Length: 213
Image (tube, rainbow, N blue to C red; front, side, top):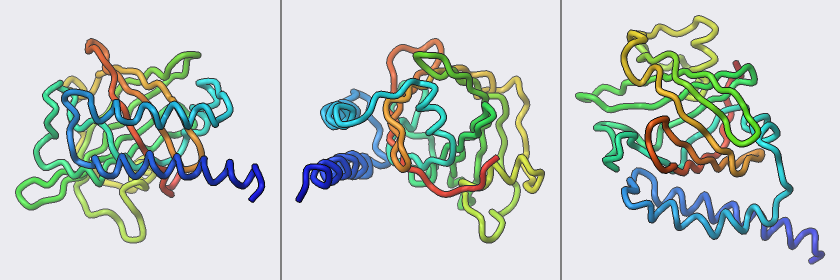
C-alpha cells in the first residue's frame, strides 16, 4: 500500500471514529462537558491531517443540509433535552444567501410536530454570527418524496403551510456564534455559543441530500 492510500485510509478512519462516537452519544445530554471533551484528541488529529481553511472557506463548504449526529439538546444550561424532542431528527440547512434553517421533530401527545427556525448569518474572519428571525410549526404531513431536510426549500417556495409564532417570542431574536472547526463533503464539526451565556457547545453533523434554497 502506497503512502497516499495509507493516508487516505487513516483520514477516513479518523472521520468514522468521530461519527461513531457521536452516534453513541445520540440523545444524551452533556451537563459536565465530558462527552464534548472526549472528541478533542480526535479533532486535534483530524485537523493535523487537514489543510488549513479560512472561516469564509469553511462557510462556503458548509452550505447545504446537515443532520445532527450529536450536539446540545438544551440551551438553558439544564442539560436536559426538551420534552418530546427526537434527537435523531435534528437538521440544519444552510443557504448560500446568508440564511439557515433549523428543523426538529417533537412528539407531543402522540403527534409528530415539525418545527422550523430560520435565521440569518454573517461570516467574519474568526466566527459566524447568527440570529434567529422566524419560528413556526408545520401544519401538514411532509409531502411525499421529500424529507425533513427539504422543508426549508419547500417553505421558501411557498409550498408549505406553517403556523408562524409572533416575532416577539423566543427563540426569535436570539443571537449567537458558530465557530466552524472542520467542514468537508460529508462531515461538519462546529462550536456554538449563545449571546449572554458562557461556554461553547460542540456539534457533530453529517451531510445529507436536500433541496437547495
